[in-house]
Image (tube, rainbow, N blue to C red; front, side):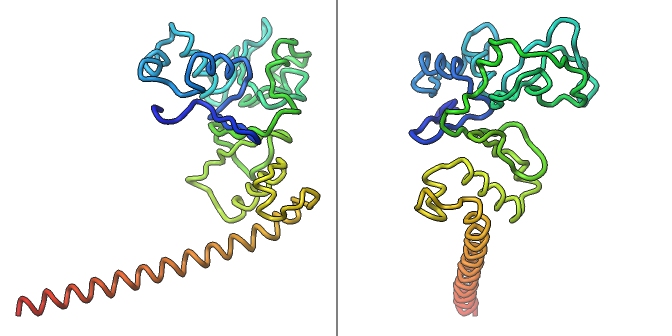
Length: 237
């Protein structure tokens, strides 16, 4: 945490651990060195009485909002909750059921329009692409919005060549210049087609190259070990 910022913003994209809400990001930017926390700020960010604690909580855990009076739901563990986690990237959400995440039975939520203040906190559809993690999603990688992509698909446990190719396709669908150029420098290229064909070929080539390099390193180590072992035997005899 001492060397990494709470968020990253470049000319063509943004990245954050869990949630990009402009007012929160802007406030953190004003309080810190462009998202980098000092030693003293790291300590304050762990104190619930400090403003920085609540700002860091939203950025690293995601947005939550209290449901309208009289509404609640039970989460997957059976816990009664009256606050709901939000799909902050869903600028097209119009009701509580549209914007909620991690609710086992969406019908438990009110099918009524969202407050205007809440809709204003969603990530604008015209903004540059944003990448985030945290949510530990399942299934095939998909775009959460045309300009939003979650990278957390339990990679450590279930990653595969298929998921790698699909994730790469999602990158290309965001319209990034540097990812599109991996397949075709022309902005008019069909990124979906080029990704599925070129991506698969590139992955196979890369895997083959890594296997070959690994084999050469192993052979080299074996020869070195064999030579040094023979020298030791000669010295002993």
